[in-house]
Image 1: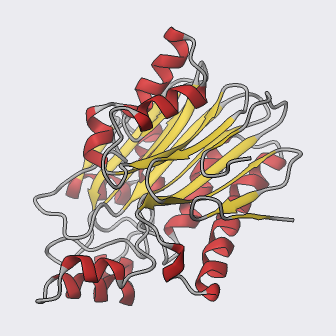
Image 2: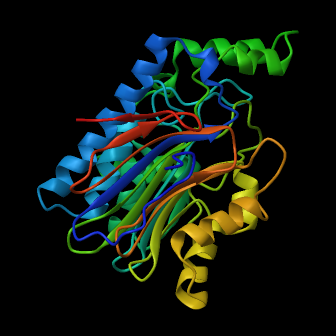
Length: 326
């Protein structure tokens, strides 16, 4: 089986869940054995959080939120703690969550103080009449909802600061990127629960050195995040501007609902078509209404983990590197 692009084939009677920790020009040769073990352990730990909820009969929405919170709290990923730094040397975080049951959606963009952007996104969905809140207003809303707030420096790690400082010296940007083996991107999760409901969640720190309040696809419903019980749930990662222009999440859902394409064929059509650029645009994780999973990308790799009920869980980094979990 080609795990570079994992597409399950059989309908699932139980739950399915997948997560990603970003896609890009990953080179596993730059990672030591210890670093690889650390990455796989982090992916497994986050997957187990959501899987535990589904195993207990929980809702897909709760599972994807909890999974992404775990990824936000892990300093290796570009979301929450460990998020990349903007041009000004601080953090602007984005997140979105969507419930396939009723198309309920919530998102935040450019938040600076709420500890968990994905929890803030869910609060927007459930405790406001809006879909997307941004900047200081979004932080203020999160505070009014009683969510935990932190100083912006809480999200900074030594590795991210070192990378940012390298980009602001005479060293070439490429050298700085290569010196950072944990240059992960957006994180996300998708799930189908035992009742057949779908959900998706995505969280990110954006891109290093971003300026002018840049916002990518992660908090844009229909682009980087989408869920509809009639078709699929999707979380994307990669060059956000491309995913926005193609409305990737909604496009895949529409191809399935209106053109009868499978999740695998719709995903591959975009990754091999409008999203195919030199070096790769990124990737996505998705689950369809029958529990089939697709984890696909056109870049060198994508940090990912997945499980279908009744089967062994897996985690992977580069093209063919798969570890099975007990």
